[in-house]
Amino acid sequence: QITLKESGPTLVKPTQTLTLTCTYSGFSLSTSGEGVAWIRQPPGKALEWFALIYWSNDKRYSPPLKSRVTITKDTSKDQVVLTMTNMDPADTATYFCARVVQWGIFQVWGRGTLVTVSS
Amino acid sequence: DIQMTQSPSTLSASVGDRVNITCRASQNIINWLAWYQQQPGKAPKVLIYKASILESGVPSRFSGSKSATEFILTISSLQPEDFATYYCQQYNSFPYTFGQGTKLEIK
Image 1 (cartoon, each protein chain N blue to C red):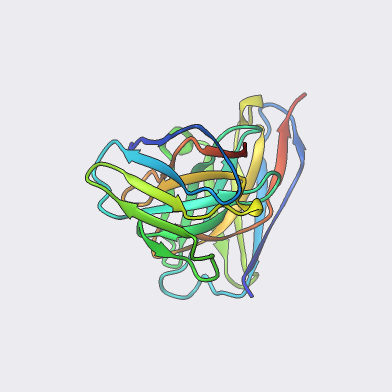
Image 2 (cartoon, each protein chain N blue to C red):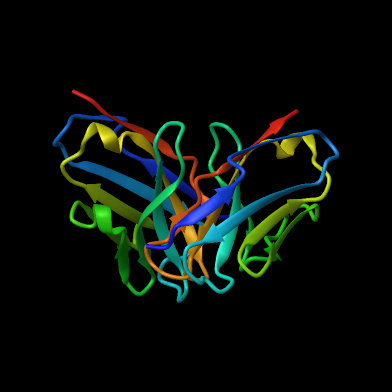
């Protein structure tokens, strides 16, 4: 069974750096073809993909967030870590991680974690 | 960036109805399109990928197709658990993008 779970702070202050961890099981990010993505969803709004890392360590970012976001993997811990700098209230959203197959299909999702940016 | 436009934004229907949700891409994405269902307060779930391939475990009342200019998600006979929000997503090129969503409501 494939599962993913997001963890990290639920509240951050403006200008702070957010660090979220996605802990996965049931697949290996060392295996060719595998990937993990981050997608976020502001309250009441649509989904937005913004970061992805493949088994090869190829990393992709959404242009609007590229300067603020870093995605890394630790296959020894079965974790993917996301850091986002200079947080703003507009970054308030539920953050999901998802297993990526066939380069771009978000096949299995974590339950998501709501991050609120407020002073 | 490739813009994905869904229609309608909201759809009211009854149990047993057949419904179509459409998604149009601003550029050619060939067939690199997926459909997701999201229940309130839950994570999305993939239904269809590569425009028309049904994900394992998804009921056969869901289907995907492509016309000349748009992609279509069809639910052949609505069930109570199908009332949710649906998103299309292109994975032809980065940045991957989603449509704005279609909320399927009970009439």
